[in-house]
Amino acid sequence: MPAQGRLHYLYEAAEEGEKERFVYFCSGCSCILHVSASLEPVARTVESLENRCPGCGSELESGVSCRSARVPESWPEVTRSSLSARAAPARREAEFKTAASMRGFSFNFGPLDALVGHYIDQAWSVAFTGARANAVGEFLCFRGQLPREQGGRDSAVVLIDGGNRSDLYLFSAFAKLYGVQPKKALRRVVTSRAFTPYQLVDLVTRELPRVVEEYGARMVVLTDVFGVMGEGSEVDEDEGRRLALAVRRGIEEVKGKGVLVFETLITRTSFDGAVTDHADVLVGLEEERGRIRGTLQRHPFVKRSAPREFTLRDLLFHNRAEAKEPEG
Image 1 (cartoon, rainbow, N blue to C red):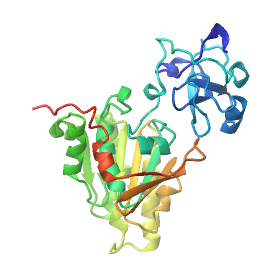
Image 2 (image 1 turned 45 degrees about the vertical axis):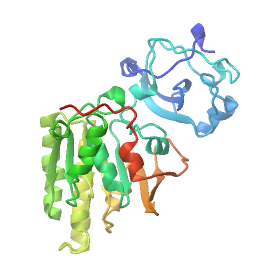
Image 3 (image 1 turned 135 degrees about the horizontal axis):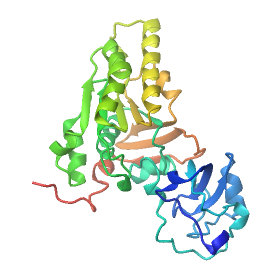
Image 4 (image 1 turned 30 degrees about the vertical axis):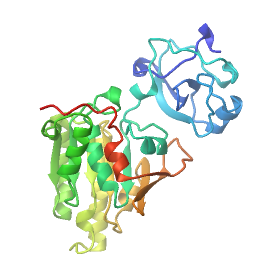
């Protein structure tokens, strides 16, 4: 066991510490398993603990998450050798909270959270590909407004619609699900639509940084990013690549301000690589026979993640049991 005879858990004041470390923790109970100054294979932690979490006793295989964090100086050293796989599950200290309060964002939707290892950093870019990515985009516009303790960003959300796919009814359905008046939720979404490739570039490179600062937004959603550059577009390949690279630079600029950026690529174009090749997290969403199959294609920490299946109805009604009646 660590010094002071207690297990450690991620908690929301971690950024007050002074040591930047890689923190390995149980995805189930958030028990700290290992803290290291360098990134190491997750398998070492799983093997050294005999595939058992000392906090909750669950199997660790495919259940270990890792994130870079500033840990408190007050923590004793946490190493794999300091823990025992046979240790009795420990009660969490009152001052410690779950990883959900520390991570930058969560979907609060089992299949998507499981795909990304229950963790998305507050300044990453996350791209979804596939026809059903549109529904996820609307979902994200609402979830970004929620308080941090609910896995949101507690922020206005900036939406740039590249394919004229915004769905007011779908967004309203998500708001009602969480007991929020749709009109109230819509007031926290700053929406712009691009009707030409040049409007898209202008919105992302010139308007987006200004709007993010003006509204204090900590989350941006770009839907059907290159929809205006698909079939029928008047730009040729060379010009299209130049414009796509400009969009990518705009995305990188707002990320650098600590803004979480989500992108959906619904219309397939030859320019998609400007987003997919540089996203921190890449998820494919393919639909077959009414079911959506999610596949994790890239993640900085999660190397393996089993595909997850769900329906659009699952996404629309996943929180029904917890939802309150809408106001008014």
